[in-house]
Image (cartoon, rainbow, N blue to C red; front, side, top):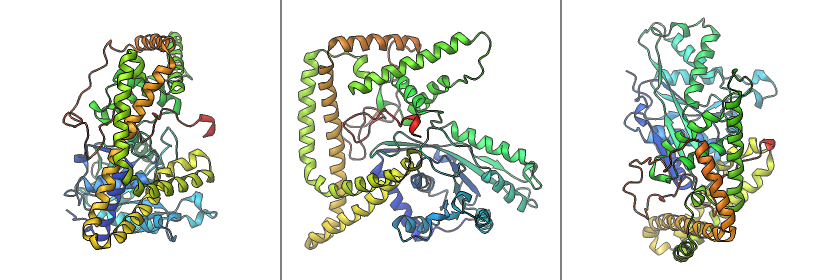
Length: 510
């Protein structure tokens, strides 16, 4: 069996850098089924959805190689050719990671210039050596609720490499599909789910239909299988409103936060929006009333979520009304705790201030360059890159200013900044709870009672159990109130903000 390309030191360094920046930016990165990754020496094409620009590639490289170092030496990435040859940190990062440039027709006025023959030849040679390559068959990254129709490039690549090795009936190549789900892809300290699916395995002996000359219908069929598998593990919705409504229904069903794994949380959301997104263009005879009832249920759920967003309160606050004396006592506890955490965070926040300011300014200017669907998918990338560069500058400056103790501060400064971030996360969460309790007092009993009755009606129409579903796992069973590694979140919708992020872009702005 081929041994694969040895891992160069530069690749290992870049991979470590990727892991570091992702760990800082995202609160939790949950990886499912890493054991399904084929070991080094087995040609493998990793296919993932593409909704977060360069960040998707970082997730793929970081999880595929870091979690399976004993199985996989390295992962070759692909990126649009226009990212190469620039005098920018992003370009250097892409090239240093051993990324393969792909020319897209949309980037060249003359379509003849978009010739990837040499690139694909090198890619096939790498696969024949037993390497793995990561491709994004959507062809482009975009900020959209649904996965774009897949290009046939992966299926054609499988066909070409099988045809080249048709004399070896036992030659094997795998297509490993991967679903990447961001709770809020562009927001600091949000969460990510990376799910690997059982790989498709192809050989010349078992798949003669993919040997040249190949029927293009077989290529389309394989592309459709890849699309279905990727879609099955993420939130692939026709609209943002549907995701918003499904998330509300999931919170009403299981409002227990991180007592369940992120994978279970995503699958619950999928269950609801799969039920909600039944086709409306053709309704079987006799089911018109059911479809109309479902439409009305979605409309009422949306109206209820709009009310929650208007008053900036959570559904859980409506589910379990609190007496006023309880609210007041909790106000005092939350406010005191948040002040304590903000106080101990303050010295370290002076180190974080240049990083936050640089990232904010870069993203603020970048948003002006185009519409939402073409820019918001790169926000996380800009925050990662500018945050990393400014963070390195802060670290070097802090070490230089404490030069007599540099041997200590070279390690102490990053550790102090990480602890500051953890304290600050909990401080923001405590103050967010404080403001939510204040709003409960301001909304008033009549409004809360009305919303409670609306919730009971929606709960019954969703046919949910009387008590919240007790979905418990090992995810948080041993977590302390304060953990150095990560925050014990109330739910997977949290980010580092003073309010819960429940709204998405207007469909008309897309």
